[in-house]
Length: 306
Image (cartoon, rainbow, N blue to C red; front, side, top):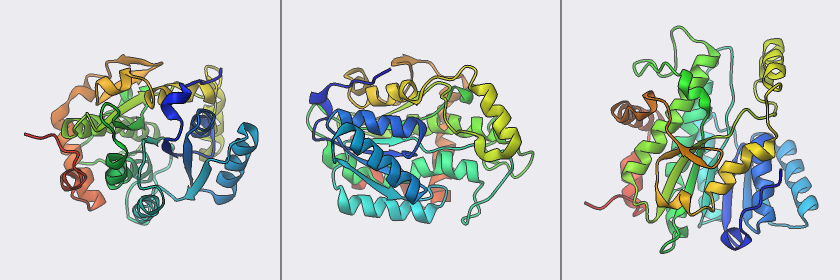
């Protein structure tokens, strides 16, 4: 399947994609580049990310790809990445938060955060909020900037514990993964409630079960799970389609804070509609990231005016 967003919508735009060296992220980068955008690929491994960037430039004949390296499970690395991006790309038309992973065994980062929570959720929060000045600068009348958060249908299986977000007790990798995908939707909805949607819209989506290397970092069990998933998997190009479409489609700018599957706005789980829980997560996430989230929105001039 070939993703074909309108050239007129993306030509000359600047797009940042995390988790961009493989899978859905790499397919999205290729589509954005083919559509005429300048794309910043964010990956964890320098050699792998550079190789993916050179492959895309060779295949498309376009030289509009750069890359940045950051371990997004590390908050210091997320902050450093945000500062580098603000210095080099002061206007960002589209941010695609795509980086994510599953860790069957509980691990902690240098910050002391559980690794799945840190990568799948907290990095989305910190990077998006710190990049608000660049997203705000890209907004034009009738053409808001866009932030897209890759969630998952797995959020239906979430059993969140707001008093133990990082599952220090009773950790299971799949349950924590599902919880973080719910947190992606809660973050999207909470951010949308605070934003002037004429300047920035934010959306969440399920890409489908995609044939990638997802879960293969977990040894034999992960490889077995990957083989089972591949029985029903779609290609990375199909998995990237909704994210690319949301970056350009009129439908994606008319409403904010929604959840999308196969280019259609669908209702997420009942838990995803619990905005009171989402507000508690918003506050807890800001504290864990050591940022004043609401002040960052006001400073960027994106807050909803009373």
